[in-house]
Length: 260
Length: 314
Ligand SMILES: Nc1ncnc2c1ncn2[C@@H]1O[C@H](COP(=O)(O)OP(=O)(O)OP(=O)(O)O)[C@@H](O)[C@H]1O
Ligand SMILES: [Mg+2]
Image (cartoon, rainbow over the protein chains, first blue to last red):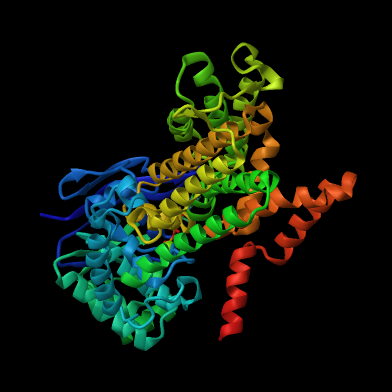
């Protein structure tokens, strides 16, 4: 059974079709990459699936339940989380607090209970802090727990968003350009991290321009161009697919892909 | 974290120390009255510390809830025979319910639009209080019956000093409690990024509504205390100017900070008293002071002082 399935999804902005009948599915334990040139509609697809935009057509299922039109916080409760290409970090909070926010739905709490600071608050905090600390270590940010997020470099914040998303304990994790702004060393570590997340039994949807990263960790690839799927298949197939090479990679990209 | 716990409790204890010391030191009824006003406005401002400082939502209609609380203290005992000391609670319930009903639609708005909508709400409440003469006594306001406890009428300035100080301490304790809880983090998260917060599973509109209701309840209790301690209420307490003053108190002291709320209120209550010697220029000078503080210390007085001490002790 597939974790996340999108079928024939369309959305238009002022007459321009940003997505036109796009479909994909991803299983637990799998990394599905969605690639395509700038403006292809990758982020828009993420926004539709994660409930920020309502599709004008199509069907999206999470574990067999239709989810189109549900707000993001409901989807989070159903096991879907994501990161953002244009970071949505809580900039005035510490790194550990950013990750703790991801534990929102995992913490038993009530407004009045928090206001009167019932003993349960401290208990929940202890559990959450332990979990959040583990996640911070897992993405390689240990030692910076109490740094204010807004003062950290770009690459660190991308990893912080991954830790924060993992804190929600998602079944499906969607990553929008996690390697942007990372140096080659960081990118290699990121590849291992993403692969290990999938190996934990989560479904990972990865949008990324770094072809070396995509080719090395993806099980399958979907190629978008101008809102349409122009190819899909295993990394080896995509690398040698003439349409993709022409429409997306171009000459320079083709060389890069060949080296990867 | 035991370290964090003691931080919270230390703040409340320090505040209690200041309040008790002032209660002893202040020489006469006039000073006690002024200090009472500071505590009462600080209580109203603390609601804004949560709404503006933590949750990042603006309200320019907060005096509307102050008015509801004040008139609850006036109307409920005279017309319905309620004991005066019960009125802050009933008023808080009414204000909270009103905030809940009105907050749902208007909290969808952002930034300037939310500011205008809350301004409109405050204006409407003020209009009702001014024009429903049969109920509220109209523009002249109305008397507030004094509570009688064990045959003693509570009208001494010192009595109201201690009642308002205790209310402020409880209010501050609750706001400080929120820091480092699921709710407190959710408030700050939605201030920094609503989209980020919602993807983390936070029901953004519900959280905003909670902050809005809390702020309304704080303003309302402050309004009731104002009415009870003054012995009368007027529609001025619900005016737009009063709303602006509350926001100024919050932002001047430092919108995130509990101490800032108290300091901001103290400045806006005390400065006009000091500046009366300037007569016609009073408002002008007060305005200038506020503008200068905001230009040079945009995050407010208390955060600036904290920064300074950090730099000096390093
Ligand atoms: N909210 C919006 N309003 C109007 N147009 C939009 C909106 N969001 C996306 N678009 C348009 O949809 C198209 C797809 O954009 P999208 O951001 O999804 O591309 P992308 O594949 O993520 O590109 P990149 O690789 O540069 O991130 C673009 O033409 C963009 O201008
Ligand atoms: Mg994009």
